[in-house]
Length: 211
Image 1: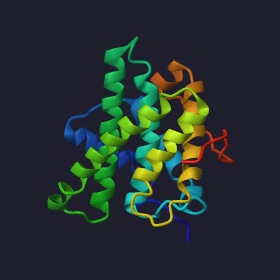
Image 2 (image 1 turned 90 degrees about the vertical axis):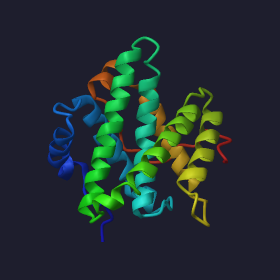
Image 3 (image 1 turned 60 degrees about the vertical axis):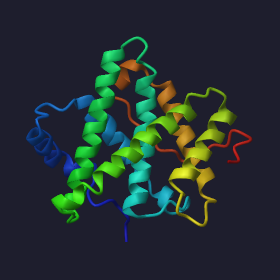
Image 4 (image 1 turned 135 degrees about the horizontal axis):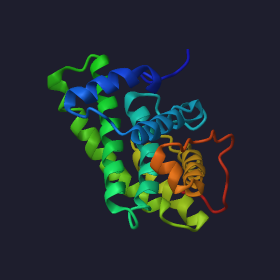
């Protein structure tokens, strides 16, 4: 049976727009929506939940989306020195789009209004911490050190409840490859939301990547 989150980004886009409009976000930033969509597609890669051993659960799926969105967030942050307000706004829009989608998915899974406050707030807090941790990891330019730090964050977060953490290195190598794709993207592609993650066929080794 094919594994998938409760709803794909394509299936929920229209309901997300309606939900954002209800909250007052009449015109959600198209770039933020596009960047979130590519992050979700990358996070849904089946290899994570099979060969790499990421738990195929709501929390495991959220952890992978948080990782991929955090990598995008870090790339936007690097443009803040020249365009601080623009970067801040895009980061906020990306966060809003992500958690509007989380809200929709949880509600359609049957989580009540009362239950939402016990789910969304902790998820938002966890994501905020990971944005910082992954951002610090990918700020390192040395390949070996970047991979090492990504491995530490992946093991501490995505594999926190797993007895077998052996897949953390593979997830870290794939995250490393995605981070390098973002490094190579133009600022214009990020600002416009044209950037798309390419599939990582093999998790590249950079040497000394044991975490």
